[in-house]
Amino acid sequence: MIRDYPTTPFTDQKPGTSGLRKKVKVFQQPNYAENFVQSVFDVIDGKQGATLVIGGDGRFLNREVIQVAIRIAAAAGFARAIVGRGGILSTPAASNLIRIRGALGGLVLSASHNPGGPDEDFGIKYNIANGGPAPEKVTEALHARTLTIDRWRAVEADDIDLDALGEVKVGEMIVEIVDPVADYAALMEKLFDFPAIRAANLTMAFDAMSAVTGPYAHDILENRLGFAPGTVRNGTPLPDFGGHHPDPNLVHAHELYETMMAPDAPDFGAASDGDGDRNLIIGRHRFVTPSDSLAMLAANAHLAPGYKDGLKGIARSMPTSAAADRVAAKLGIPAYETPTGWKFFGNLLDAGMATICGEESAGTGSDHVREKDGLWAVLLWLNILAATGKSVDTIAREHWAAYGRNYYARHDYEGVESDRADTLMAELRRKLATLPGERFGDLEVETADDFAYHDPTDGSVSRNQGVRVLFVGGSRVVFRLSGTGTSGATLRVYLERFEADAIDGDTTDMLADIVAAADAIAGIVRHTGRTEPDVVT
Ligand code: VG1
Ligand code: CO
Image (cartoon, rainbow, N blue to C red; front, side):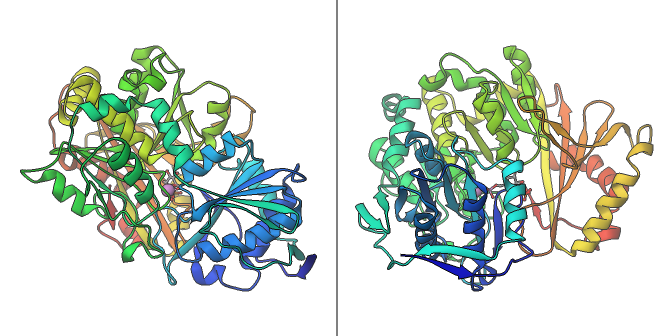
């Protein structure tokens, strides 16, 4: 029996950088999640007889929304829903399942690196048949639908047991509960040389941050690769991530950083985020910035079986440092610059134009799925360490000696009043035309613009993707507002300086004049009242 539930629109269901993210309390309003899920199904074609993948990062509300989504999917005509056991699927594992099972798409329930729990964040994202986040034309249609929706439809059925593997029927739809790890781990075994990693006898610390990668890391790192029990820390997914912020950076993964800087540090350290698509890489006594990690992975990827034939191209988001571009130039392959957010890489990957992609926010991945992939990056690093016999520190230093070093940092100003942040950006945009030629200390502005992306595969254009100010000599500052927050605005300021020879500098010292210029240009202190960023990554 299918039942119609009358509803009225919510005006705040516009997807951001990566799906719809709101406070749990917002999602708990009657009809809120239902409206969004129904709106997704209302704007996509081909549901009759199709397969849908559903899974999430295990955060508070995950199971409840999955049960509802199953009933709405059954009413929408799907023939099969594939759901991770316990409602668990990491974002890259969901992407893989969509691809290998020929699904029409998938619902990924996550607010990723945002905190979880009854007073924190929840999120829903729709991924399309290639396994990747829906592109803007889909999210725009979806948003428009949320503004007109007047009913959602669901089959009348009880909740199912999400913890029992196997198949059950909900209405006419088969729900298949699958092991969330098995297919993903098999894919990793194909891409990387597991015997070589095993034989290298490396030591490692992996912080799963009480989020979704725990079961994946236990199976892949400890069971399949033979790392010592205890290698995986915080390996059980918790609905509130143990009260922590599952964002793998030097602030929120501070304990891992301490471990890796200690005299008895293991060879390799890594962490992942809420939904398993990000990675933090820290070698023994050597932190690697995500932008550098992308460049180093690209330069050495051919050492792993999955990439032995080389790369077709490298893509990075605009705020990500240009270190990867230098690798692309040396390899004689194209480099692409896209707006922030993984959805912009999908077309390049589908077209075979890029093999490896990355973002400064600790996201790297390849054409093996259509999402960024935290454990993939960890395994590629391990494969490179095993194949070369070198330490992370040696690989980093040799890389900088060969390519020069892009000193890089991101300063985040969180919880800024939205009006003030908007005013800052508007003022900045107004003065773009007059910035070239202006001097800030020793820095002279060469060009300044508001980044617009012209997708080379489908001709679509995405404007207003961040203000970038380039200085003579290759230094740069980028300003944009976050599209993943759930309260107020977050101003992100991306700072970069290239040095061909001085590779041993201290990042803070090397960026000091650019930090000063950034404030002089944008009036950060004047607009936000903040004299220091909340988070430096
Ligand atoms: C942030 C990052 C961006 C990333 C996005 C989703 O977006 O900057 O690089 O793709 O989060 O990552 P924003 O708009 O807040 O800057 V995740 O791990 O939350 O799916
Ligand atoms: Co994430």
